[in-house]
Image 1 (cartoon, helix red, strand yellow):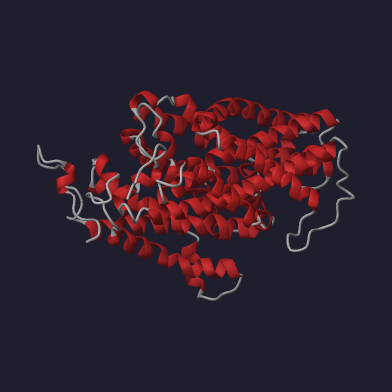
Image 2 (cartoon, rainbow, N blue to C red):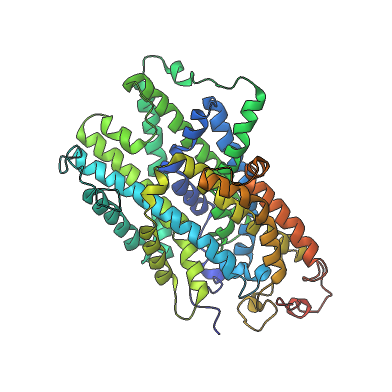
Length: 490
């Protein structure tokens, strides 16, 4: 059985052309998106001051940056994508578990971002007078959206498809050019907000609504977990991009420069602009797509909505297509390539009806973000423990592509560690998903720390199960790593 194709094979040294700027631009283009803009909404509505919300976003991204850089190491060192790197810990067959889990989450995100992009197109048509939004009230049964909204959603979906079928090189080009444009657009929006209000200091007036420290911490920790969960997806499949980097310094520095600063800045812009809407329009307008039509002349409105569309497009194709495309390709490398995997992703993104998920902020934070962090955190923990602690970054690259090689089959210990690490968060997830206290409240407290509990427990359990069974930290000189690796199916 073939375990490789041209998309999963290691990237040759002469094809590793991504620099520090390309990785930083990738993160800028992915981070500048509507979900980032609205991240602080739930925190402020829960009682946080504006600065507490912004700092929570910054701290969450500094935390997730650590596994991001660490998991990126294997991609740069060996030139392999995430599903192939996962074979070292889960086995050549067992790697389907983390690869498909990550792919399905990405399909959900792809759908959400596609709905947002389609909504921006919908507003553009309204601003140009080509569509009467006020009269567009006929809802399609079962879908709960209008025909015009569905067509705009499908139009943006087609834009994504047109780019992803062109391959990774076009994606690299789009991200590099979109990044500076999106930063300038965000700063322009901030300048607009500050110039329209009479007292700039009023934008910073949002104070904490908590009456005690205990109330604050009760909100802070689940929100911090959600912020970590926001990019817990990329902390797994970041090798899909760092495999194109020339050095570890470039991948690490690019991520450090691009991720935390951009997320914090754009969240701050969202808070300030929303504070301005309270003063100017008498209500907090968190959705930038809803705000843009109120900015002024039709031309200004269209330019702003085009910027939002580009922001959503650049995020979607990088964050939500590359990983599942590789993940689905990993299922059957001989029959599914990157483009076919990308099309599978795009189709699933339609079928999940993402508008239902995005329009419920409570489900978005506590069921979606925290829920999948409970699954992806343990996967990250297992991979980090295997690659850094047990194998000391030494892998047999040829063995990763050999169905009968050192990593063959399913590493049952990795699967066991994954199940054990996920288990404590399942009752809390059920409570959050159903909105009922099916399980005791104790599990809700654990669920608030889902990512942290999952990754910590996975590292501990996997280490204990694999101790003495993986590649020695310092193999004997002259002994190939492949020969000192045990059977994964044992």
